[in-house]
Image (cartoon, rainbow, N blue to C red; front, side):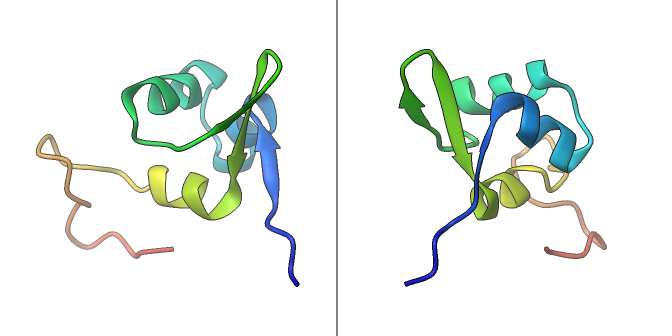
Length: 68
């Protein structure tokens, strides 16, 4: 069985090159699923990469952007 890679919010922000506040906004808005462990949120790498795809105002991936 292959273990999924999980990240804390600071690790996730560094992984996708954005701020910790942005990752938290994604979690609170429902764009990024997380698991709460005590006071921390853990996010799955696949979910993180999906959430990091730039979106149009309607919530769809922007045209011409390669999917990860």
